[in-house]
Length: 295
Image 1 (tube, rainbow, N blue to C red):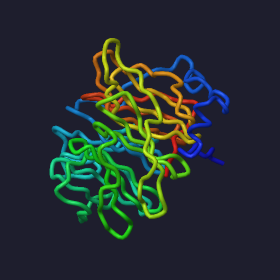
Image 2 (image 1 turned 30 degrees about the vertical axis):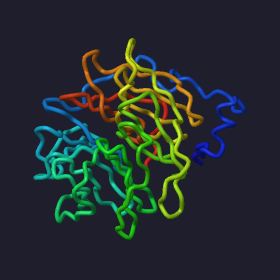
Image 3 (image 1 turned 120 degrees about the vertical axis):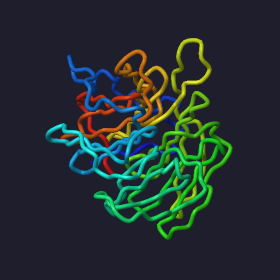
C-alpha cells in the first residue's frame, strides 16, 4: 500500500521533528550503476512521461516532429505520434489519452496515444507543464503569469492559484492525490497546495527547500515527478534533488554530465524502476531501488 503523503494540515508537525528522518538518497541508488544514454541526437528534450508498461515518451521541443517513445523491453527509440511539434509537458491520463502542454500553439490538448484527432481543452495559455489526476482534473503551470490553472473533468478552465510561486514550472501530485506540488524556477522552494474535491487549490506554502548552485540565489527548479512512497524528485541547476514525504532534502543525484541542463524527470522501464532524465540533446537513464508512482 502506498504511504500517504503528509498534507499541509500536518506540515507543522513534520517540520517540528515529530516524524523520523526518511532514508537518505544513497539507499535508493543501485551501487555501481550510474547514468547511461537512452536516446541521443535530439536538440532539446523535454516532456517525459510513462505508461503502465513502463514505456517512456518524450518530446524534442525545439526541433522534434511529435512524441517519441523508448520501448521498455528493447530500449528502441521510435516516433510514436507525428505532426505535433512544440510540446513541453506531457502525461497519459486515466482515459488512456495523451494530455499535453502544446506550448508552441499556446494550448492544452488531448489526443489518442496512437495519434489521431486532437481535442483542444484550453486556448491562449502560456503553458509550461501539466499533471492529470485519476479523477480527471488537469493542472498546468503558466510561468510568465505566476499562475497555476485547473481544467475540471467537465471541461471548465480557471486559475487555481496565482502570485504565490514566482516562476511556476514543474508539477506533480502526491500518491494520494491530495497534494499538488509545483517547483519554482525563480526561487529556492517547491510549493505544495491542498487539492479540494472540486479541484480548487488551498493552503499554498513553500514545502521543500532546494539547494542552489554555489553563489546563486535561485535553484532553477524545473521538472518534477513522484516516487511510489511519496518522495519527490525535482530537476535543478545542480542535479536531481530528492525530498522525503515530509519535505526534507534527502540528497542530490548528479547530472549525467557536468555541462548538461536537466529539465524533466520520470520513472519508467520495467516496473517503473528506472529513472530517466531529459538533458539537452539526450535522454539518460539509471536503475533505482525504488519505483515511481504511476497514476
